[in-house]
Length: 409
Length: 223
Image (cartoon, rainbow over all chains, first blue to last red; front, side, top):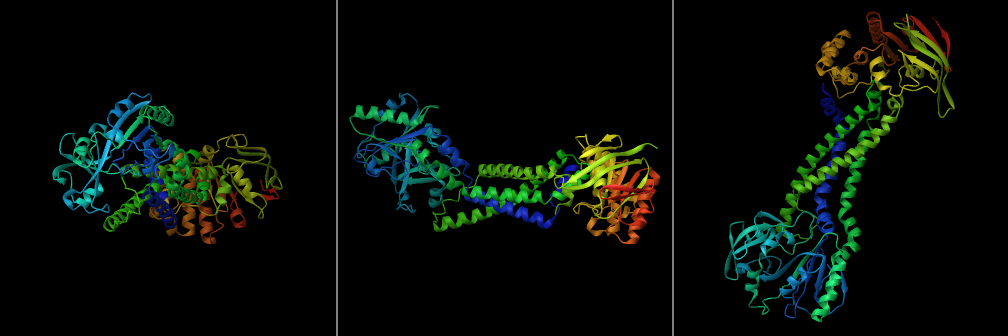
């Protein structure tokens, strides 16, 4: 019998014990997958912080939208600010921003990229029925800025500027019962749906779920807003190794004096620093619990093999071979648990998502969209934790003399 | 005949020195001998056997087995694998493996191919009279059959010495005699040194030499 076959057989040596370990690990894996392994959340939001947004409103824009907490800097009317942004600076300022500011900001030191957006709302086909009072919010920008805006297209492609093309979110596509290639009528104009967006796994940022080229959005909104050159938001990407807060403060000082107006800044980097730990802790509680469970189950599984390890040492097995056996067994148990956990999770998730869509149970927001990245990260973490969990009791057992280990019960 | 085991003033403490399991043992065993070690419980006979088999280390003295100085040797696993064959009181077979797979276990460290391993295991299975039970799980075998498998397992790497710690302790008299006869046959055919720890005088009387141990000392040696 080959050694690998021995490891495989040894992994299932006691049916009840194996079932116990696999069940425990499976529950842990389901917990990780369902509650959301927020690796994406950490990466997108806190590791890529060289991205900031400036938003300036004018008096005519009452429903000013402040981008969510992914924003590095938001320069805005504080009266319309919401709880998602951390505010430093002055208050009660009414400003507008025109497109010329984009070019000025591009020349600022430390600024890597600038993109302006314009957001408006439509009632498509006059029958859009979401929880948003029949309103479809669409953000316009230049399609070349897709990367800077972090638009995640899961099907199809980005729209071409100057064409009657639109990209809608997965949720709206479902509500409108449309797919890529279909057309949607907005303000008496037909637009071809060329792509579907969805938030990335673990990402709470959904403001730019429906996107169109900026000129079209402005034209469609032109009748309502006289100021055709205003932008709702300006997103700024900061060069690596530059201090976002410092750049924001410089911009604040400069444009306050140049525009002779007061500005207030919303700096997400500061917000990140303030809320990172509690936010991260809250998001990762299920993962911590699951990891501890995996460690306990694997440690117990290896601990139960102490007598067997004693026998193998007594008959001349080297510690290296014993380690290989334990790590191999741990790997096999982890793979089995992962497969069972993943399949169970997909079924549970499908059921929950179906129920959620039918009943509009948006409060179950902690349930994340499962994608290959989630499974990959979960797999790597489970294997890594399981191997670590197996290694320590194996080292301990291998240090016992064979006679001590043989007496172990 | 050359000495295969040479022990001088071997001492072993337990419980941080408060218990002296071996109290200056002096002993030599020649190659090809069949030795029975007797003594009451706690006398140190199993400890002595474990020292000879390098399952445990002595604290003082000298112990040389088949030319290996066991107190100074760092890696004892190769020695255990190549020189010693162990038969325990409880068979210690792994239940998830078949009889033949249990016999093959010690051979993983001997660099033999899977085919050679299987061939030798089948020969040993035949020699212990269980060739028809090759694929049986140990849980489906009787106590005597399991102990015969354990004897075959001890022989897979062709060791110089077989160490048996109460090999008949959990068997009835009929099965006990069968196991002792099997060990005796192997000892005679292969000229393997056989050292048995036993309480049973019937078993001990079949050996060439009886060593009595008391309080960690050799008190009588029939040699």
